[in-house]
Image (cartoon, rainbow over all chains, first blue to last red; front, side, top):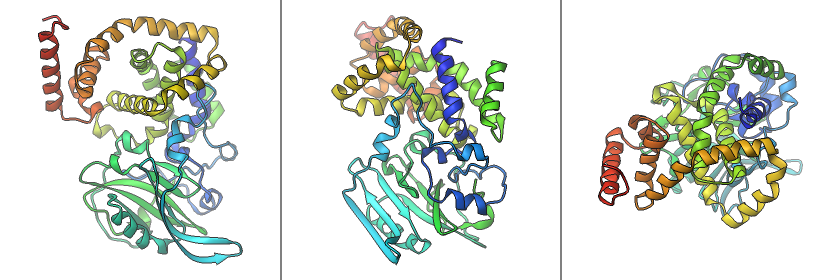
Length: 222
Length: 188
């Protein structure tokens, strides 16, 4: 194999292969990773149309830094437009204060580059976040994971790469999305799950309207 | 697949499941030339071709878990990523980008790699000529012609890559080729 091709492969394997097992988490670290790891059982593959952030199980993997683009790339260049987000419009609900750090129930931020950043700090913030998303005309809904949920909606088993590659984890728990890339007739569902003291967000694409909830038994947090 | 590389990968990662890695390696090895050529038709700068090719495979690797075979084969999926990577690249301020890339060029590629990429760029000369000949077409028509006639995707695969229907893609191809023939830029 030619030299550059070989070198790039080595870079990919070294820096990004973990993303093959945990595709979304490679987009950014989650603040709640250690908590999630303690709570989650060893579950099989992810359900169709839904991806939870990467939760490395191997100690060696957990110690790795956040995936980088490698020496061949300018670090972070590819994701820079998504992660360097200067807010212009933000709606934030603060529920309570613990010590000096306020607990933010939710935040929906409209960014200058057209992306929307959604952060859920408490599950009670789901309603407010959805109201704000609707106000902005974004076909995305935050849906909580609930035990015994029987809501049914048609989940799509695949997400167009143009959409998935433009969803990024930012600032710990937030997800930055590109509303203009959500396929017509579909709804991007941001699945909120309580993990310890935090709320983790994953996502899936649903045909038509979003379900009211996602069953806890189906949430293969992995 | 090169056994040594696969074995080395497993040892490094202690990956929970080697199957996706092997699948991705097959994709990488079979499509690397096509993706590098895709960017070589767009740039004569080895560093640019290297970066965009790398960006594409990095993004593909990170998105591989969300790929659904039911939605189509892997090749158009990969080309769709390449297309997005190039679109993002094109959005950046050209002057700043070129300055930054020139600054980093010698750090990223060694002489052998630069020569290898220059050979790829030279090999894509005809493709660049054809792309120039397509300049009068709409961007989507131009890409349809390129994906089918240069990247050798099937019309169905090109349709998936471009996010249009197969029928729509065929109409675009037919219309674009007719226009090129009329203007004498395509052999009848």
